[in-house]
Image (tube, rainbow, N blue to C red; front, side, top):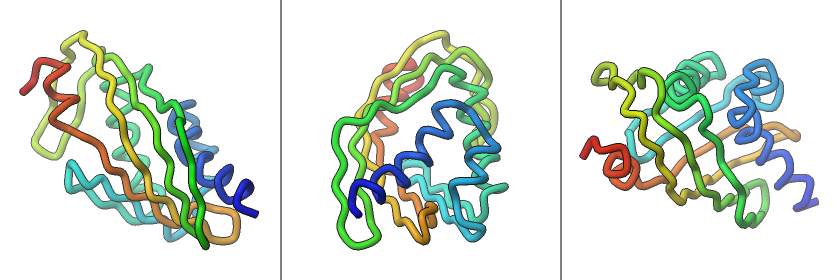
Length: 139
């Protein structure tokens, strides 16, 4: 049971890694909630979430997460991973566009994911935005 739950949770991240927006729609519930703790962004519904993800993908087309560990309890999965990417495109943020720096980043992160009926219903992302901004020369 927990392996299936972990695999379902990973599909959310994998759909972003692949920039496969149709797959992203398929692996999330209709009322999916996404939160980025570091940026204070929260989105409800996959169309709002994809707007955020496409913004990250435009700024970091090669961005992806590599999984290190996963734990499951009840309907909740904790994924430990490392995000990497190169800032080669415009990054759209709530405060405006950040032009490409050409620099790369690597940062550890944790996701808390709730799975309901085999699909991701909630994803709360914890990452060190300061580390990323420093590596990109933006902080």
